[in-house]
Each structure stands twice: as C-alpha cells, then as structure tokens.
Image (tube, rainbow, N blue to C red; front, side):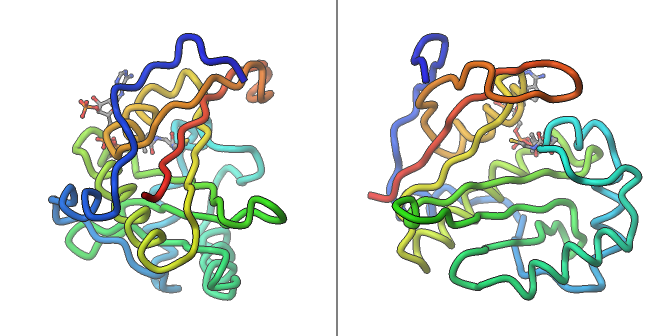
Length: 191
Ligand SMILES: CC(C)(COP(=O)(O)OP(=O)(O)OC[C@H]1O[C@@H](n2cnc3c(N)ncnc32)[C@H](O)[C@@H]1OP(=O)(O)O)[C@@H](O)C(=O)NCCC(=O)NCCS
C-alpha cells in the first residue's frame, strides 16, 4: 500500500460526532421482501454495477433482488448489517457492513449504492454516517473500511464527507471490465 496521492483533510470522528452530523430525512432500515421491486429498479443499471465488485447479474431482476433480501434477512445478525436506504419510505439504495474473520473480526467492510436518479443530493453521505453510527453503537466492531476504485471520485468524496480517512492507494488491486485498476483504502475507527 502506498501513501502518495491520497489526500484527506478529515480526521477520525467520535460516535457522538457522527450522531450530530446526521441531518437529512434519509433512513436506513432492515430489508423487507416487498422491497424487491424498488431494489431491482435501482440496481439494474450498469452505471452502478460498473462501480461494484463482479458477481451481480445484469439485467438484475426482481428474482435476484428477492434472493439478496432473503440472504440478508437470514444472515448471522452479529456479522452482517444490511440496510435498505429510504427516502419518504421509498427504497432508494442499499448499504451493508460485513464483519471480517479471524484476527480481523472487529473490522468490517462497508459497501453501498444508490439509484442513479437520486445521486448528488447528499443521501449516501447521510446513509454512511447512519450505518457507521449503528454499527459502532450496537456491536464490538471498531473499524469500518471501504475500498472504492480510485477513479470513483463520488464514492471517495462520500467517505471523506462521512469522516473516513484515506489510508492509502492499493495499486493494481483489481481487474474490472478488462482493466487493471487501483483502489483506495478508506477507514473510520471508533474512538
Ligand atoms: C457513489 C454514490 C454512492 C454516491 O451517492 P450520492 O448520494 O450521490 O453521494 P452524495 O451526494 O452524498 O455525495 C457525492 C459527492 O461526490 C461528488 N461527486 C460526484 N461525482 C463526482 C465526480 N465525477 N467528480 C468529483 N466529485 C463528484 C458530489 O459533488 C458530492 O460531493 P459534494 O457534496 O462535496 O459536492 C453513487 O454515485 C453510487 O451509487 N454510485 C454507484 C455505486 C458505487 O459507486 N458504490 C460505491 C462503491 S465503493
């Protein structure tokens, strides 16, 4: 991991500071099977899938969405924290925090996306703060990290606005859509 070209003006924030920072009328809640239509509507989009890990089908159907929701609802509640992101009770996106294993069991990886028509309103920044707040308040996890592709400026910005620190660039860390790409390591640590 190299430290060059990885700038962040933000230092780690406390749980209380995260709580105070949550302002918008965005909510995160447990998934419901009935969310499958809105979930599929948001995720069936290559502009989103191109920024995620491989493995999700395209087109992404309601049946795929139902399978995902059932998996999240039956997952170990100590290890998987998966939320629908809602605006006025409509599902606009997804965020999940996943506990790691072995010596990393107090660390968790975060992943997220929001429907393209909702981009640019600050919604994901709020959802990231809420998910971190929930996990730090309700579990023994002390570190949450995310690894956006280095070119995913919007995601890097979301993480910085939510108090994550860019710890380094992971050079040639992925092969995505035929290209070898860098990723960035962002983390927030409970104080
Ligand atoms: C990344 C993503 C979650 C952002 O959601 P969002 O609700 O639009 O995020 P926010 O509005 O809270 O913040 C986006 C920030 O990025 C900035 N931004 C967006 N596109 C940008 C670009 N091309 N260059 C520079 N900044 C950009 C916005 O201006 C905003 O920053 P600002 O508040 O300082 O102006 C959304 O674009 C998405 O779902 N993308 C596809 C999936 C994905 O990338 N998931 C993350 C994988 S690590």
